[in-house]
Image (cartoon, rainbow, N blue to C red; front, side):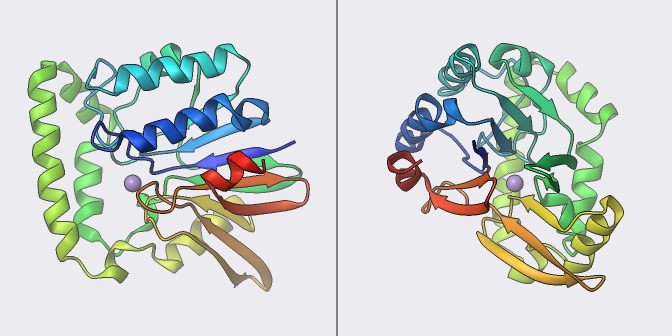
Length: 245
Ligand SMILES: [Mn+2]
């Protein structure tokens, strides 16, 4: 038995090949897995659960077919799709989970996150996040007409793209003390997250014990899936996993 973790697919009409790859995964081995966890940024943009920008309707029906066929789907919000709500969960048959979430992975306590909250050196981003990503702001924003929400979202995206390009790599990566703090807080030696697009397995010492941080791959160039089973975790290319699940 296996559990799969993916994140940062950033699905958009601009990259139809990634949507096809995602479909293959859903119709193929993911269906037989114990669970599929999507740890945020499934979508490039998400202006609210009434967002019907192509290929969103196609993705929703694909996920719905996946869960109807018996697939178990867990959804975590990313910074691109933090406006995902219960309606989306109902339509897809997935279960929304909070960030961070503590799970038991074949006997190992594991913390899963999107990852943006670990990038605490990026103070401007953290302030921005606090302003927009809270219950009050979300409720207020969702009261706006859909067309306006979409315009605002695309405006924000353009600004963040420019500012991110100007920031130093160590600023937009995770801050190790923040990683250690939350792992100690939850009493885990294993952390899985996405967001940074820096696929890696980091090994470090935490209170005299060996800890691991698994960073998921984005789906821009190297489409990745983290496969967990009784013997541990391994990073795989999606195409490779489809052939040898
Ligand atoms: Mn992200």
